Amino acid sequence: MSVTASTESTQSMSSAPAGEVLESLNPATGEVVGTYPVHDEEAVAEAVARARKAARWWSGLGFDERKNRLLAWKRTVVRRIDELARLMHAETGKPTDDARLETIGAIEHIDWAAKHARKVLGPRKVRTGPLAMNLAASVQYQPLGVIGVIGPWNYPILTPVGSIAYALAAGNAVVFKPSEHSPGVGAWIAETFAEAVPEEPVLQVVTGFGPTGAALCRSGVDKVAFTGSTATGKKVMATCAETLTPVIVEAGGKDAVIVADDADIEAAAEAVAFGAMGNAGQTCVGIERAYVTEKVFDAFVDRVATIAAGIRVGAQEDAQLGPITMPSQVEIIRKHITDAVERGGKAVVGGPESVRPPFVHPVVLTDVPEDSAAMTEETFGPTITINRVRDLEEAVAKANATRYGLGSAVYTRSTSKAMEIARRLRSGMTSINSVQTYAMVGALPFGGLGDSGFGRIHGPDGLREFAAAKSIARQKYRMPLPLLSFARKPRHMKLVMWVVRLLHGRGR
Ligand code: NDP
Image 1: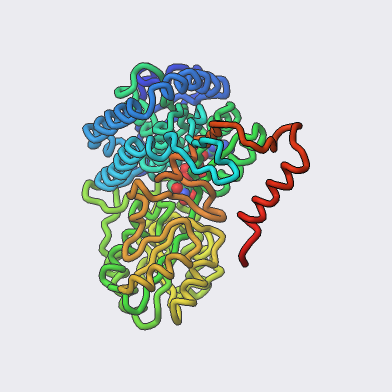
Image 2 (image 1 turned 90 degrees about the horizontal axis):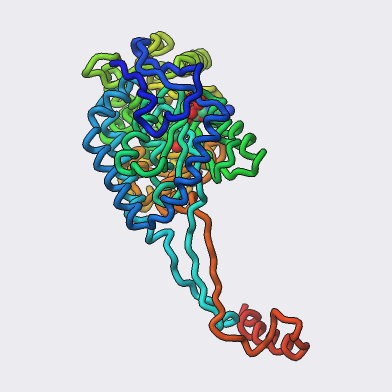
């Protein structure tokens, strides 16, 4: 498949500078999937200037009309889902059904953001309290203006749409810089949105490498929503600091699953194997560590090993795991596996020989030292480490002993135990008796702690990230006591202090 970007057919490409181009390559074959312009600082600034005007128009449409447009976009995505899945497969190597599933997640988020924006962000009255009883107060959340979205390649539609749909629903225009590995999906997103919103370039795409992303950070956008590695997140934050541009950082993870004695081992193994190895392990909320209690350890490892050994890897139509999308990641995966084995970890399935670029075959490691790279750094490959623990206390302590804090999971038949553990796990999201399911729920905020970043996409918090609270206090009548006035007298203060002591100074 070869898709050469038609630079005139989308709003995204209209001001491409002549010269440098970006080739999007099929990671399985090396074939050129498409060519895209490298947008320089000037081109990015032009896109943001266009977005600024579009933002005024878009925010003026109001919640209901924006909802209609977003739902029209959603229907276009549904209609063209097969074409998108083929493009995602070509650019990232992921199986087309995984691409469809990911797109379904994006569709759910467009729908949720469109339908809930008014309720979450629209004006609402708030209580004023006895000392301000002469006021009528309200709060509403106003769009920030133009949002710069910088996205990764591993979930090239679900991840950016998690920011884009919420930013748009809140009334902002968006300039999106997709990864150099998935510019075609980025252009496709803007092109389909333009079908629903042809009047103004409300969603534009700029393509290129890191410097294009850095130019977007410096362009004067009102906020940057970055998703990518922790290392790049730090650079993005430093660049945004130059102009005091606020930023959301959705970065990497080292997610753990805890499997308790009373867990349904068959269900846990099935979900954990997919959670670790689906998308060839290139998932920010991929399960990379499993802590399993003694009693069920062997049964769990056996079952995960059987599933992992049966996974079909390759570029063929029925493959369940595709290639490693980013060639430089292959060496990191190899290093983690080799280090774990050299330091006493057992390779139950595969081993260093499983790394056969551009593919990595499933690897299951057990008894891996807690301070090895495979336990502390993001591996981002189809590997899992499974370590035994005495009890759930040890499991929670080890799961939390990471500088990341993105997702986590717990398997137990006891709901109360599961809820208690979920609350104690230091991560932004936890799934119980399932993995990664929170990502598909529109109403649930998504984001991390520590090296996994800060800020939230999805849900009400995700809408508010792209809006500013506007508080209005309207005086209905003058207070008998002139407190905020030079007419204030000591007797007025005496009276007000008496009221304050009565209201707030009593009790224990
Ligand atoms: P990178 O950090 O390499 O890149 C992310 C984006 O940042 C890309 O568009 C990249 O452009 C751009 N970029 C690179 N340098 C700069 C710069 N100096 N200034 C501004 N932008 C820049 O991440 P990957 O694309 O490799 O994505 C994988 C990572 O993303 C993993 O760590 C994964 O865990 C994380 N991730 C986190 C998610 C979350 O929600 N928390 C979800 C999905 C992934 P270019 O590609 O052209 O270099």
